[in-house]
Image 1 (cartoon, rainbow over the protein chains, first blue to last red):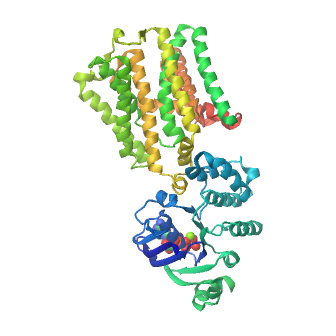
Image 2 (image 1 turned 90 degrees about the vertical axis):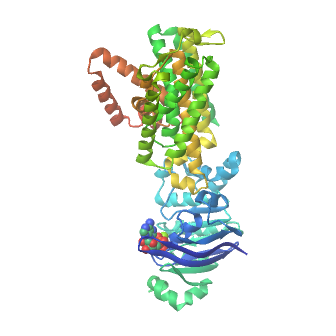
Image 3 (image 1 turned 180 degrees about the vertical axis):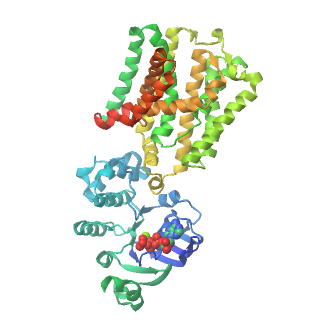
Length: 236
Length: 314
Ligand SMILES: Nc1ncnc2c1ncn2[C@@H]1O[C@H](COP(=O)(O)OP(=O)(O)OP(=O)(O)O)[C@@H](O)[C@H]1O
Ligand SMILES: [Mg+2]
């Protein structure tokens, strides 16, 4: 059964159609990579799923329910966690408080145990009391991923989580995602092909606001269309 | 948990200090302090919205005067006794802040400032319009005979000081508890990054409305207490000046600190008091001092102390 489906999802900005008529299904428990060249419409697509961006038309269903009429916070509360392409943390608050805010909505007074667990998971325990804006860029991105984990999401949407991370940090990220509960469904926007090939069970390729191809990593890797618009430029 | 107990110790210590000051300071200063404590409650209400939630209102005189006139008119026209009249003040502030919050929160940033300013201006004009009841700018006196609660004459200096202290203490402990609660920390999250708070699943709009109403009711409690303890209600308290005062007190004392509002109100009161004794152009002196403080301690007095020395200050 799919945890997430979209039908006819479309976004037009004045002049630009960022997404047109996207039908998409993500089975429960799968790790899906969403790839495509810059400006393909990836962030717009996940923005419309999470409710951050209002769709021009089309529907989004989550766990069998049409969530299209719901505002963002209600969609998130249904079990979606979202990390921004441009890091978005609570800069003036401590690392621990950032994670606590993510955990507290669901867990209330039981949040502290979850915070401690997540701090270990993302290896930020020794920086728990630091102010988030004083962290390095890489650590801020890791923190944002930790905020996602603290929500125990059913669907975890990550918009280019490894952008700007060092090699070692990318390896740590891969290990982190692999160690997650296999029941967690993941939608991962990613430019780094090694991350995609290592983590993804299936890949969707977006180009100019449309789905160009969908399949296993091996299928996508050998797809001629994909190579011409996307992989070709990376692997040339 | 240590934060919890240290913060409580600070608040209780401050309340005890204020009680002790009554017996050590000359009457002139205790009279001032009674007034300042009541106005500090106004500042604390303002701080909840501005300092913690990050919403800059320019219309809080409306909430202050809703409380003031809610109590004042109930006593003046309705011959109510202080307790139900105080409740009327709180209810007036609750309704007014609920309505204003509901409408003004459709806007953000500068538009929010302007809309709140406009509502407050409309409130001021309403008070003038119903001048036959409110006596407009001239205002009305609440008779001393009426101002007695449980047989205690609130116009007496000692009783008034301790009534003001009780109100201040209650407001301090309540705001202290709010800002340390999960709810209060979510308000801070909204201040820090509203979009992120939404994308963590918080209903930001609803939380902001609750913040406006809590802020409005605290401000109204201050207005009601002011009318009750000092026996006067007038439209001056609904002017834009009284929307700017709490902003200045909070900025001076330290936005987003629990004791900053009191410190800011004391500082500004005595700054004006001192400067007006020196020169007729005292407002100029006050302005220079405010600019200096903003330049050299931009987080206010308590905010600067927290940033530089005492990190745990609530
Ligand atoms: N707010 C906006 N107003 C107008 N056009 C927009 C807006 N946001 C995105 N676009 C346009 O929509 C298209 C898709 O943008 P989107 O950010 O979804 O692409 P992306 O695949 O995430 O790209 P990248 O890999 O660079 O992150 C682009 O042409 C972009 O310029
Ligand atoms: Mg993008």
